[in-house]
Length: 276
Ligand code: PXL
Image (cartoon, rainbow, N blue to C red; front, side):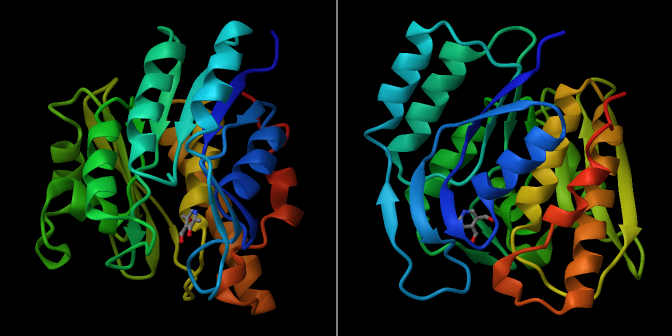
């Protein structure tokens, strides 16, 4: 079998471990070919650094997509995340329409914010657009802040995690992996609704008492790689949760600055040879 191919539509932030600097190594380690379609090029991510540069790639994106189309490239998965402008919503939707085949897994990480705050480059129109884009996905991976935006509810009035994933599933048509969910003290992980089975299930690991940046991107990248390997949603989420936990534990032990993300590089070996 040839190496599965994934189109990854995210920003490239030069420093701080998130988006493409996380997706590329993780998806490669998992035996898939990651083809980046950058939405923006930043010097660092926007969470914790002042004065970051931001080069909007909106105009370049349709040119890249048109070239890939002319080459008749096919993708086993399309995986989108942080977008750089409101116009990109329609461009990414068009990319889905152009490149989606019956066997393509489409994962939308509806990146909009975290810890109750919307990211500083996101406008209300971009958030509204992200909600529209997420309707096209087979799988979405919101954190609690993004789930509140998707459900149009204040963060402090959210229903139970199970009710949230069921409501976010669009009547069972879309799988949902809600991250940052704690089902009992000292535990954290995700609540999954699998559109293939119609069932909800929690995936939990021990909580590492520390805050980290970019763990959502690590989680969604491992999940996407595992889905492309043919794992079911719960197995994919379990692998992602275990990997994030291992990264968090190592990063906390080293007491590294939060804004630099999790030190996942020495742990990539946990993901290689994991093909079922
Ligand atoms: O981890 C999400 C993310 C992705 N890309 C950029 C970001 C963030 C979160 O802050 O700033 C540029």
